[in-house]
Length: 365
Image (cartoon, rainbow, N blue to C red; front, side, top):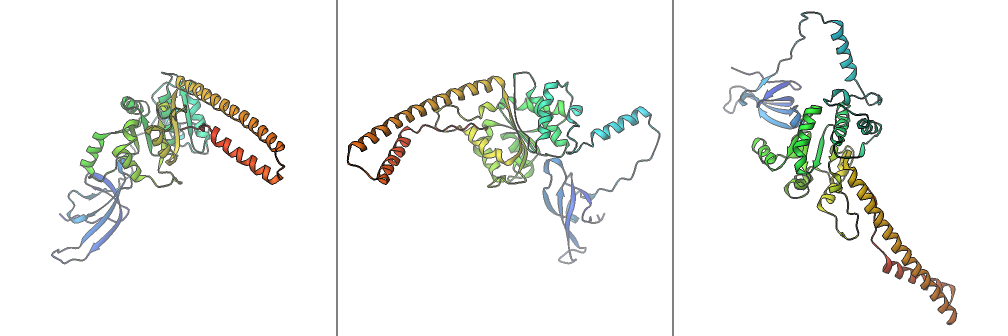
C-alpha cells in the first residue's frame, strides 16, 4: 500500500505521537528508488514535548499516517433548559481574560473546599503583573492549596505554562498527589530514576527540565551535581524577557533563606541555587511556616541591633580620635587648611576600615 505524503500544516501520527508537518522536501526518483521520497520535518504537539522537531523519510517510516479531519457531529436530540444553562455557565467561566480581574476560575475548577483566607493570595496574584508572593501560614492551614489556586489561575488565564516546584524530598509525592487530585494538574517528579527512564526513551541527550511543563524536584537533588548542570544547559546567561520558565514554587522556603547571622561567612548551596535560578522565572511563590517567619524576623532584628550597636561604638571612638587630633594640631605648629583636611580624611578612612562590620541586606531569597 502506497501512503500519500502529507502537506505542510497537516496533522499526522508518527511513532505513536501526534505532530504537525512543518516542512517537506521531495527527492527525485532514481538512485535505486522507483518513486520519489519525501523528507518531512515534524513539530510535536504533545504536552510533554511541545515544539520538539524531528525529520523522517515519510515512505519508510512505519505506521506513519495523516489524521483526517473529523466532521461536525450529527444532531440527535435536544437538551433541556437546565443543561443548556449549565453549558452557558461553563462557557462564561472558561472565557475569563486578563482584563477581567474580578472573575476567578480556579476556585470553581478545584476539587477542594476553600476557606475565605485562602483566596487572598490568589486575588493579590491576579493584580500583579508578576506574581511574587510569600505565603506564610501555620501548619495545616493549606499553603499548598493557596499555591495551587494561584498556579491553576495563571494557567487558565494563559499567563503561565511551565511550573517547577522545589521542595524537600519527603514532600514531593504529597505535592504530586494534591495537584492531581485537587486541581487536575499532572506533575512529574524529576529525580535520578526519571532521568534514566527519559534517556532510555528519548536518547542520552534528553533534558528533563524541558520534558514536561509541570515538574517537581527535591531541593537537595537539584542544588548541585548533574541536575544543576542540566538546568544550566538550558538557562540563558542573563535573565531576559520572556523568561525561560513561568512559575517557581519553593516549599519550606526557610531552608533556602540567606543566613541571618554574621557567624556564617558563606551562603549555603540551597541559597546560592535559588539566587541563580529565580531571575529566570516570571512568577515566584515562597511558602513558609509562620513559626519560621517569626523566628527569622526575631533573629534578623537581633543581628541588626548588634550591627548598629557596633556602628555607634565605632562612631563614638571616631569622634573622640578626631577631637584629640584637632587638639594636637592646635598645640603643634600651625598647618594649612588643606593639610588639616587631608589628615582628617586619612583618619576617617583608617577608622572606617578598622571598625567596618559585616553588611546585612534584608531581601527575599
